[in-house]
Structure formats: C-alpha cells, structure tokens
Amino acid sequence: MLEFSHIAYETVIWLYLLYGAAVAIIYGWIGVYAFGAVLRYKKENVFTDYSIIASNPDAPVFSLLAPAYNEGMTIVENVRSLLSLYYHNLEIIIINDGSKDDSMQKLIEAYDLECISYFVQGKIETNKIRGIYKSKNPAFKKLICVDKENGGKADALNVGINVSSGDYLVCIDVDCILEQDAILKLAKPFLEQTEKKLLPVEE
Image 1 (cartoon, rainbow, N blue to C red):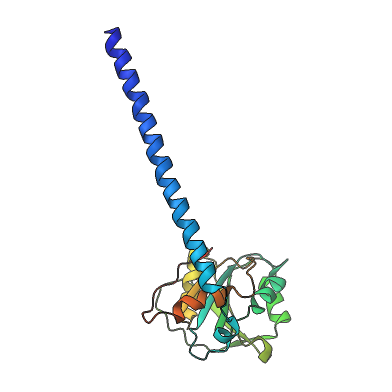
Image 2: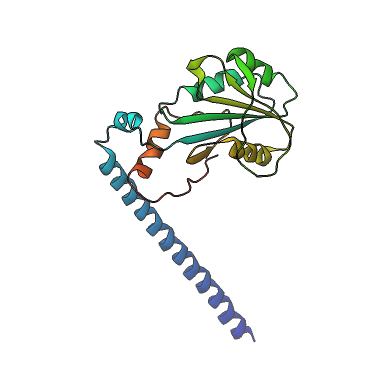
C-alpha cells in the first residue's frame, strides 16, 4: 500500500512537470512568434510616409466613440487632445451618459456647440437621446457631442454606433491619451487590402 502511494505521488509530480514544460514551450513559441511579427512590422513600416495616408481621399472614415460620465474636471482638455489627432477622415463622437456634473455645459461653452437636427441611422435600442450637438466653429467640424439619459458605458457606445457614419469604429474612454498618428497607423492596413473587416475595439 505504501509503495502504491509512493508511485502515485511520483506520477503526480511527473504530470505537473510535463504540464509545466508544455506551458513553457507554448508561451516560448508565442513569444518568439510575436517578436518576429514585431520585427516584420517595423521592417515593412520603416519607410512609410503617413502624410500620404493623411491626404488620401480614399482613406477610410473612422468614427471615434468616447463615452463620458461626470468628467467635468477634465473633459474640455480631453476632447481637445482627441481633436488634435492627425487624420482627415475622422469624426469624434463624445457621448455624455447622463452626467450629473457640468460636463455637457462645459463642452457647449468651450466648443461653441448648438443642438441640431440629426438623422440617427442606427437601430440599436438605447436609452433616450436628449440632444445632438455640433460646433458653430468650423475648426471643430469633426466633433459631435451626444447628450443622453444615463444607461452605462455599453448603452453609451450603442448610441455612438447609431450616430456614427464612419467605415470603422474605435471605442475608447474619453480620458484616453492617444498618439497623434494613432489613427493613421490604424488606417494603413485597411488601405492595403480590398476586403473590409471589423476593427477590434480598443479600451
């Protein structure tokens, strides 16, 4: 009986060792593959002139969706950062998800917004939209602000999807800091292929 227990114990130990070795091999292979992919990407893009993509009239339209809830302290600066993104065919949709602070009022004042009649083409069921705003200042023509009743982040994103007109959607938090050429780098693969694909959502 004691000998049987000893054999069972050794068997369990070997199984754990084999499992650990298998996991290490798999993760090692993933690491090597990822490193190779990064090197290939850098080699393919080292001479890329992103200004050509920026000025290309056939470049896809991106809709950047950014829900906001009680972001009054920083929302003006956050939106200004998004407006500085270097990409022509871009619409920036800020969704005020029923904030209880002065977020919406600050946006209206900072960006000279006015409530407009806007055709909402999407059909996803969401909480009620109170108003859709665009700026009277042509410098902020990329900006669309949606004021809606609170429903949570997913509901706010669904409103953004309904309002958007872009070919691809990029979903972020309103306080995310993006590099100025981030959308350019996202656009490049889609200009290199003929079939459209859904862009992975970024949080």
